[in-house]
Image 1 (cartoon, rainbow, N blue to C red):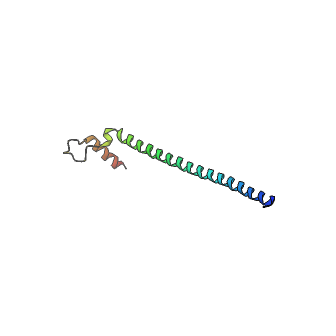
Image 2 (spheres, rainbow, N blue to C red; image 1 turned 30 degrees about the vertical axis):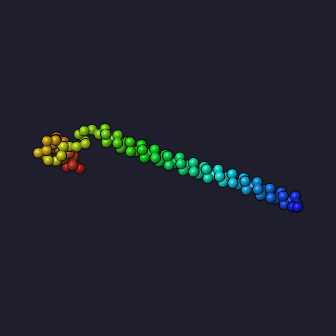
Image 3 (spheres, rainbow, N blue to C red; image 1 turned 60 degrees about the vertical axis):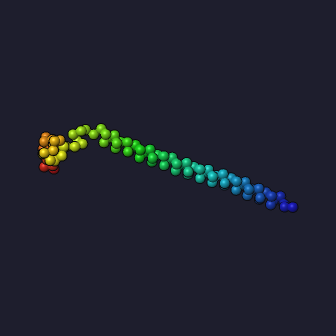
Length: 92
């Protein structure tokens, strides 16, 4: 039969192992939870960026979308817009 000192050592090791296992498991759980929260935040951030780009594209004023082309024979040709753009390029 084992002495009482050996039994104390065995149970101390058992309790220490169980305590370490619980601590380690909680650390792993916290790390995984943080990674999951970070991934969700990145996903939401990319969705917001994409929505802002779509909103900007959708609500862009019509005159800045197109000047009607550079060809004067084009039916959508905007002489005033073309001349304004030329003056802006020359000012630079």
